Image (cartoon, rainbow, N blue to C red; front, side, top):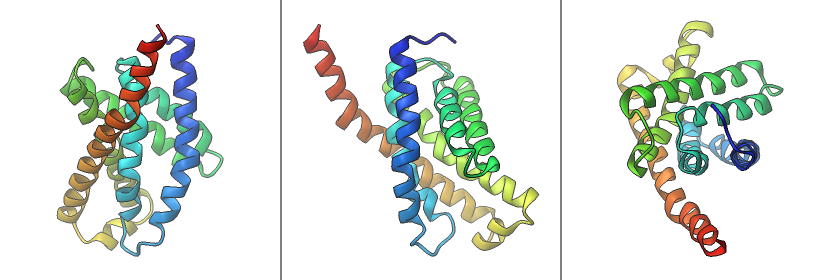
Length: 180
């Protein structure tokens, strides 16, 4: 996939800001004693951040590219986190390709970006279930709770993307058109 210099710059900035600002949201989530709440706090933020490059570039693969930058920046924290972030991006783009085929409408972008935090928690549960002795699964109870939590996270991811479209993207687009 070919990106312009502006696209690559924006993808890098969004990846870096996701790490820096995301740490604050992640830290806030640590005050909630219930498993999965970090993802609930991060979901609207991730939807908000990912909407910007996807709306601008409108090509399948942008989420993987942003995730790659995000994963590279997070791998020094832990290799497993970097791998999970990278796999979340790839999985989100594959599901987007299968379900939506393109990003020609804002609703497709919002629905796709909402998948990212949901897939993130599902991959976390998968890794927890298969590699760390089922610890997270035991904390939540069963797959019904995971399904409910995933649904809430998906909706919050869409809400974050919607807010990004209304707060950030419309302002950026209107400023760019006024400078032309």
